[in-house]
Image 1: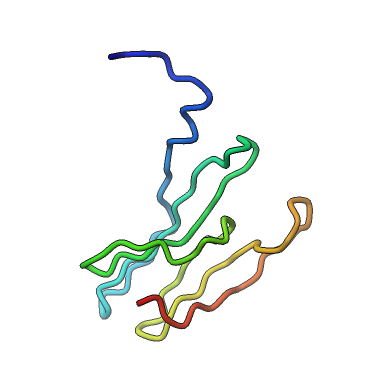
Image 2: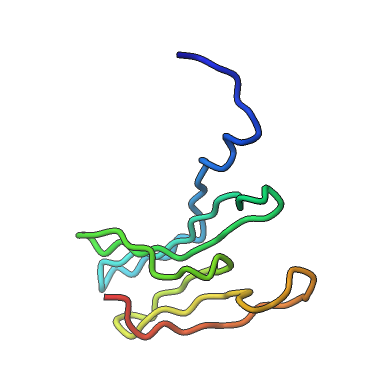
Length: 98
């Protein structure tokens, strides 16, 4: 069945970006973004694919730009706890995701 795209359909769209691969550990980290239910902002979380499974490793809804540190963990930027109007980002370190 064909129908027109409506504004509410945008909630179903997922965008993948900020890919970071580590060849030595066979891990791919990336950001998945989606339009928030309010339709006024985006929710961004970090996902990991290790060659066997795909997992969401953050749920802060404002996490992005993951960088894999070999087998030592993951660093990413976040706006967790910062108000919508407050500028800046924080650097977060995730020791283990497995």
